[in-house]
Amino acid sequence: MKRDRQRPHRHVCRLCGYVGPTHIHHIFGGRWRRISEKHNFVIELCPRCHEQAHNDAAFARILKRDCQLEFVWNHSQEEWMELMGRNWIEPGEVFRPHRVREHVEGTPYTAADFDDEEID
Image (cartoon, rainbow, N blue to C red; front, side, top):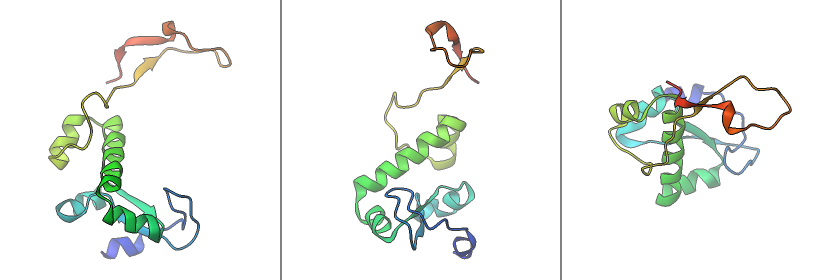
């Protein structure tokens, strides 16, 4: 796609750290490719990792799962399902962070530092 060629490359593989020529991999291809573009569900990979992402189903599933977890962390599972219509995470993997009370830097956290309510 034209947009792929315009995307800036750091020339560092996000998975193995290889420095050199890289490719932009759409984590969700096919019918989800435009969604991948719109929501930046892409990752910069070296040629070897890019080939593995296309040829190793378990590896590709891990990339999809991690992408979904990151999205749900900032949004919600409901928004994900509305957007993608498919789930790549297991029940219980998604948790909402709890609000942390003001804390004195340099001291260890205790249970009292955390509210029982989830962040909205």
